[in-house]
Image (cartoon, rainbow over all chains, first blue to last red; front, top):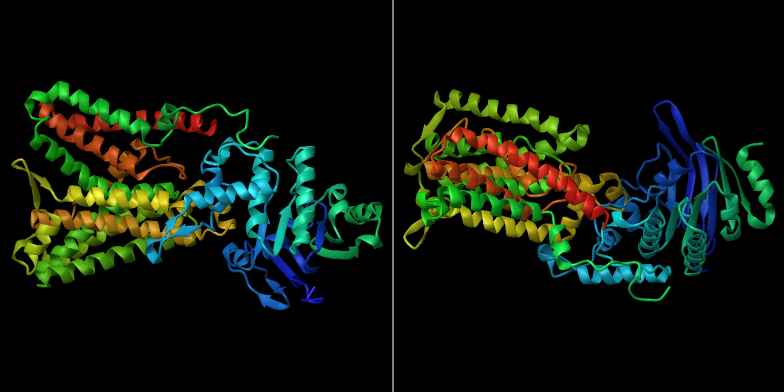
Length: 248
Length: 343
């Protein structure tokens, strides 16, 4: 890669406190272009807080986030999205009453026209949605149906397709396979792989090592709000990762 | 799976699609109400052009505020201060023009600037404190009303101020805000045009602009919308400015029409606005609704309020009818939403 070894996303000494609770303390992690980092940790290890700091939902109290070696500050999720960081949360972040297409483009609506008279290009929104879903191999019914009519797995697929479409550089997936069936899970893992080959960096949050192990290049393990360590896949076995996660 | 349509998908008929629009229930309701008054008071003037003009005027003045309130409620917030702002705007216009001798257009600009500030105040108070807007604007309802009464008494020594017709620029303002458009010898107030224009604009914003999509997202699930990049705080503040401006517009229309203002004008309008918005199919929880529905709700409000007068029944019964309509509307909306979510 032309960018050499500069990580596209890196955290240094990242700390986040909620009142007296130390959610994160001196967390260091690196993500390179075309790399899948599995962020592992037991419940309460700080995985969610870390990704919320990376996606602009939380602002870290100490330490810094760097993109391509340059410090960045995200005041709100919109800032992170502008930098090409898209996140799929466990709770999926979709509006049940809105149509699938409207959800898909929410926050990044295609427009036509000029200046203050720009209007929402629903045709383009429907095409984008359809394209994004088809690329993931999802055949959805009418994209003008409300998201509330979809099953959990279908919603998850739409959320992932959405992030893949808009998160050009960094894709953060929080437990992406938790609500999916076997076939859908395979498709998601395959798509993670193809996003990686397109040059995106991917952070995969999970507490299921068996899902993470086949696709991940690197494992970063969080324990009680701190980085326990980062390991290349060829340096550790599945069992070792599991042991470190549990803190045994 | 084959490309194309999913074989598990049932065909959705045009009729069902229509029924699942947020304004469907209100449209049916409006028809029923209209038919009711045609039977009860059709021969006493309800059906005449003059009768139509009177209920359209009532509908328009509430409808202007209700349109903005509908957008705000779809965005997930309430504004109970609109009635007080109506009173404040009309009084500010009158005091500036009559007591201080401002040109009416300068006074008008000041009133609109005041409305923007009041809207920003409501909006920032809500997003900064994180308190329910119901409480925050319940507080500003009293604050705005109290300041209006207090300042008016302090400056003029009265609670009613008249003489607006003497101020410079009144004639042009009258044409713009309070003139009648003659149709077959009957005057239709120009406020009806303001109302229709505003409903059209609001509908376009809601359905055909990115901002409209953000309103639905913000009201449907603010956290989720925010996480995909919708600036939910800015959306809400903008909508609060919208309700304040709409309230000020009605305050101005009434002040110009009555050539003066009363500190108590606009009382209860905040509740009437919410009622017609809900009758129009907008959910109290946000994320779902329409400006056209609110317009139909305002039309029902106008027909009932004036229709009762035509029937000769004591107008006190109007509130009973209004409360009943609200209950029925909420029940219908609840049912419609459940159906919509099931596809």
